[in-house]
Figure 1 (cartoon, rainbow, N blue to C red):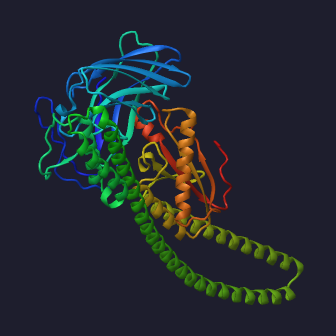
Figure 2 (tube, rainbow, N blue to C red):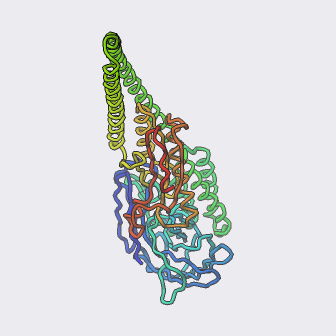
Figure 3 (cartoon, rainbow, N blue to C red):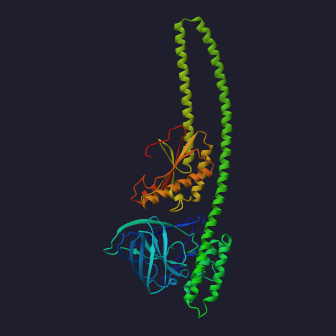
Length: 514
């Protein structure tokens, strides 16, 4: 089944494929990075392998590079799947572009995890064995800039396909996983000298160079200086070692792998520290937003205090009028019969009941107006609907890092605004937070993910000033409560959500459907 490749970048990228035979080079002409990740969405065939059964699948070319063919024999036993791979005609990776030095075999789970199984040697015929804990997964082979990469590249040269008579339950699922900001697969047009294919330098040495180049381009000189320096020192030693004809590949292969590992480590550390810096900046911005909301709330309270004072003047006038009326009633009661007094008392009770009703109507009207203002304010930043149990604020899964509970910058910004609105809300309220997933993946995995995402939202609201007493429940329901069909991508997208229920504190928490 041919892969569908869709790349979603907050940056503006232009991929230019230069053709020299089947060679490809991805060239960067302009990049404006506003997010920390490139999200690649692909669909491929995932097989669920039966326990203790040998299952053979074909590895078919995707149309990129040489038409490589092969097969994989998979057996799941004792909690692990053993993959015996045989591939033919992968071709030299430099033919795909000067940036590529190796091939990597990956297992992709339905939940989206990408597990690096093995680096493939560059030979006409490849035989190797790898294992994974996955029972349901797809197999892909990608071209990579070096062998220690953490994430698959977009250059997929082969993938598993069913052969006639293949045993095992078959599932087709949308595979989503985080990619890099583009530093892996982009070559700046300003690079001098330009990067060209190199068939004389050993591929492990080229891979070591690529790992260090990637770390530098990601910003490691600023955010992971010590880790980058260690990689550079070992790269310098490698450059001295390999040219000697006396040194066969096995003598410098370990050092080259060390450089790749250290370069990847520096890149990962850079990503982490960049993210920490972004989070710190966002927290400062959120603090400013909350302070502004609190200032506005204080102004609103002062205006309300003034309004209350005016209301108190009106009530005082009413009390004086009632006192005068009471004196008049006393005078009348002294001059009238018992029957007249009974009639007067009945009328007085009627007046008091009417006044109580008017006061209750006014209180309800004020509460409804406050709720409407809250609904309008929240609707400007998030999807909101009304239900019997209160206002339901919906956060879709696109506001979270894929397959994780960590909030994206956009989600944190929206939650900061939500917290500011709630802090200024004059009425008492309570909050419940519920996490939900689609039906893909195991029940246990989905329950854990939905609970973690609900707790992530809860923690951020608390950090933004919402008190613990306001939040009465935080729950994950996994795939138990879909609001749409799980048979389509659109339906599954709707089902992956976190809902924040906001209701008046005096109302009894809804118990239905718990």
